[in-house]
Image (cartoon, rainbow, N blue to C red):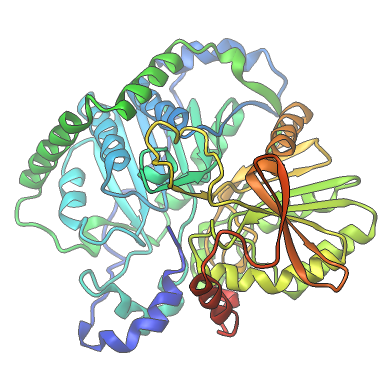
Length: 515
């Protein structure tokens, strides 16, 4: 799924001139609220207190989640254990199996008296207005939409009338329960991120965290929730006549969805993992110093973006601290000239640099590949190693549902520095993450986790990715293995001529700054 909506608006706007004008009432009254601080008496608070107090100040506990079914089970268990609050912040939430299960879990928590705050970006909420109004009518469930589109039926019209505003999206992902446990990373809420689709499987990474970092994530959430760009549903939506009736219709739809999937293999797998997480001991957490890296929500306001606190500062500091090795994993990797120069300079200091991104066959965005492709030669000439994920790669957690021909797409956003620091978050190495969208992640200063993740990469690269290299004549080549034998490709592997043509055409468009 893409977040290049502003670009689409520019390319398709001439077709939408009949869409009319509308506006968002950013002054619409909304109560300010903040995370509950007195949650030590909750189930999670009492269960975690001894473990948190046993570790030094400045350390938190981290548990990475690479398996899609594990990642969904963790969210469902957290929602079930919530007693006081759930704060959920996502870029994308789809009306599919996972999306409905997620909303169902939040609604059930609200019915128990848990305060639920759901903050969504507006990029993929088309057709959701009535359902959002229904949920928002629940006394314990409040929805706000970050930087909403004014035109609800022809939202691409905003690409003409308000492009500088709607081009800036909230790409953060966080899920926090009772201000005691949080889960952040790269996954949106949709089937492809959790192994529930038969035609697509996204390899991704989240991290479950306890300890002081949770309060910092909650403070970050509050800053977005109370920001001027976070609008109540009534400030922009086409409101139904009877929101309460819409809530009951939604309940019926969720019940029908639950009934339809109850006996599926996927549902059984998720249930098994839910049971596993209920019994999981907190000793699975690795305790380490950390730095929460986050953009200010002011980045969403163009006039304030340059002065807003930026995730780029801690990420750059971490990367430039490398003394031996840097491994960057980014599905959308679009370095411009300064980025190419920076990676080349690091390599020139004798530091090993490895980039892992999507191949053209695996990439779900041909425009992004078109922006990335010209960087390969200069990076390789500088000695940077490049690996491109295969479209037939294995994705943990998707094996139960994904058909044999399901396309794999790398969606993990991470980097490792000297096998001592590990970053996990929503940040892509592209102009959009750096300059336009807001992002979130955590730098974990744990040699144990960094080495574990690096070793996992080392073990999988040969079979799950193609190594890109230059032959003796300086031409791009791809090295892979088929049935254990090395194979060299002189064209983008696993692609058709049309895919290569489309990606090549995208290279000539002046859009790289929007990718």
